[in-house]
Length: 397
Image (tube, rainbow, N blue to C red; front, top):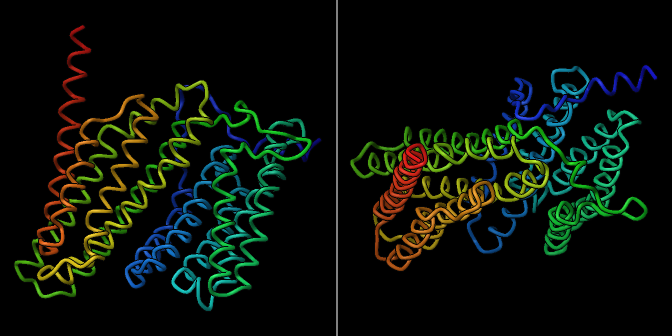
């Protein structure tokens, strides 16, 4: 009985319309993923081929998945308690191993990557199961379901780590596909069946803030890398303009996501009767392209900073236009999930980027970067003005 009570103390008390703050230990844990995001963007930069892009996509999806699963668990458990903190510290160790192996995950350190990833996914979920009191049957069943699905994918990850070449790639694609399908399949297992929507209730404000902080991580990593790259270059007019364009582009992305969307998402999920369903769609799935777009843009920034003049090669075109494009697709879908309508400004921005793509090969990298940044500024200003006008109109009525 005492053990059951101590387990129960680990759980957060979810109070409707109240926002539990993100704890310092959660922020500390997130710092590991600054390194992971840097490794992903640098790996893509140095392996920007069709096959390299597929490799990096698999690795990025794994990094995001292990982080967002941890965000779910720390939404339910109380990170201020020592056992939960120790679990997060061990996850940090696994995260550092995972991040270190990213550049050579499809070469010599594939097994290390697979072991670190599987250990983090299984270890955290097993801890959650252990920490759940016996009387919380629905939660325990959820933990068992997830552990069952992750055990199958862990076999695929490890088998891929033991393999080489195309075999490793296909096994890891199967593993990441299995894991991404599992929440949509509601973690069905024999006898226990599907998980219920009620069992997935979350403290919405906390979940929204956690995912917002990962967006900050990705944007911050891009700014830091740009600054470090710029510091090593000769300060010519072209380099200075490329640096300013990269910084303003990052600010525009921040504005598009945070000025209206992040706050609206936090408010919407906090009041939702089906917070788990909304968190699964808006934050677990739809934040994936948002983060991917920021990482791809960071690759573009470094390419443009180092080669602002001359011909825009395919790498520069794909990253400079593809980054903002993927980001806007993610944000328009995210905001549709929380607002119920498609943002016109984002749709226009997507169309303008596609038009820019048509002329991209004729533009130097610097001017291509400036053009994509201007489009992001237009989207940010348009949304701010239109939503501000809508609010004023609502007040008058």
